[in-house]
Length: 217
Image 1 (cartoon, one colour):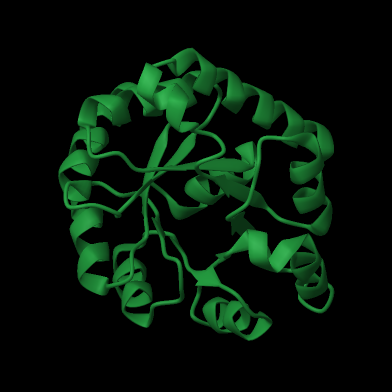
Image 2 (cartoon, rainbow, N blue to C red):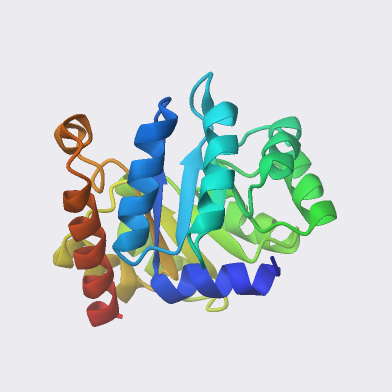
């Protein structure tokens, strides 16, 4: 898929769910629940021994969900970027800036969103060709960091992850600060909801979050 289409999809919806579970069937249910809620870009994280196996299954499953883009997160090594891109990852996210991952993604024309915690790190990532930078951890840095960063660097496209909640006050603060999109994990997937298999509740959380984002932009 063309890189610009991926960026436009992520920016258009404004939210990327971030999820991991070692069970492929649960992961499929969560992915479908997000899709039904209007989500069109989904990040499955490389956080467990079965991550690659489950991701491979999701990459096949997502073919039945028109318009859904599947990416991989928590990538800290070039070899892992290569592995997941081969399995079907359409974008790659890291908790930090990794030059080896930049090289792999550039060569394969796959969008790479590295984690950055300072203005200098964002600038370094931009000079390396990263069009969207992930501000992380968001709950530590806060909306004020994004606003201050974009004052001298208004061209910056920021995805914030960490501490983002499907609540109006939280989302409004981030979007008013100037983020392009948000990554949302545990607050979108309550443990009790996953355990009970209440997939409709995840769909509703996604719908509500996307409606709020549309309102506060």
